[in-house]
Image (cartoon, each protein chain N blue to C red):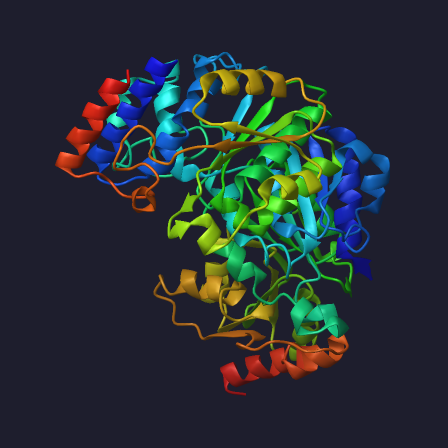
Length: 267
Length: 309
């Protein structure tokens, strides 16, 4: 999986460099989590049948990290990897922020922060009504925990005891304008989530063993669960790591070459 | 008299019986929105999100992703007032979420300006993929629920608190999306209205009749898509046209008609009657309609002025 993750990181950098726009920090930071979801036998899916009834749902709330989603979907076989280079280009299916069903495997429209968890709660409720056992994973950013809607969603998930829902929080400590705790503190996050009726776990978002163990376990959970994934924004590219300047900026040619060199060593 | 919201609630109950995909979501206005019976009959398909309208729309989007047909109910000032961005995401995804905005307009009365949605149609009409409907009576409310359910995309339905006269005897056909209806024929002038203003338009037409002005009255309950043919005919076959609405002039029915007619070679004079860039206030509906000019007298006077009488 380490090797797959390194390849996905290279594709993320290629996509953002080629588009000369996009969000590298969060995409690179969440690559290990996404790799485990798609290639660690966590998510059930059929690339040839994207709306397969028994699939698990991955609802992405912080849509700006879609490069990691697109790269995973391509590698998993939902569409050709060659299409990745059309990211953010005119007439591409790979929009700057994802659009439902475009490309196949994208489960929801996302971009305006705070909306994804509501959608995930709706999906989980709909599945419960049908007594289905599909699991719903919702990927959220730490910054969007400043949106009131996110907390409205937590309350509803707890009310309906949605044990088919797992929220994965990218706790990378940064947002577009700086550190989350300077812009608008969200701590103590763990206690807030617990007080909203969620089971809470914390893990190192770059530790494959921890990720596999926790994500396997979460599909058998008895209560709605939030997993705080501590990640390093820009992970894998030394000059991007932990630097909020790289939230939404594309590398120039030198930076691109340097980043690709570092990521190849990662393999 | 008939109740629009009662019609909406009754039709939802009937739909619930015929299609299990129909779910109703409320933001703690279950009784005011007349969906208590649905809640009682289908507790598994009724979700109360509490006072949380952003979540209301977001959760409905998620339910639609699993094949449900969600109807979300609240007051129009809150939904679409609070959740325009979530509804925009629904439209962009073309999901079959049906939004019922209740207690719209000055008709809300004593609750005052905070609770009188006068901007909801503008907010919904600008949204690509959105269909915008406004019933004029209880029976049309039922027909509109059926039409919204059968339509594959998002729909906004505007409802009002007050009772309205039953117009069934004046209608020749059932409601259809994109179609308006002529409730009274006449070739001198035309009045175009929706919702609670249809009854005022009919009253104004009676007043004008006494002065030998034959007035055509059109119920334009489909605000988007508009019945373009019916409107263009009204402009080409009469000498003056007036639109009337319990809504801001900006962005409502009058705006929609002006957008359409400005693209033609029309020469017929046209006036928009509506709330003119103001907020409402507390009061009885009749007092408010008087103050803001939404009366049969004002409609009739506007027509006489246009005709130079």
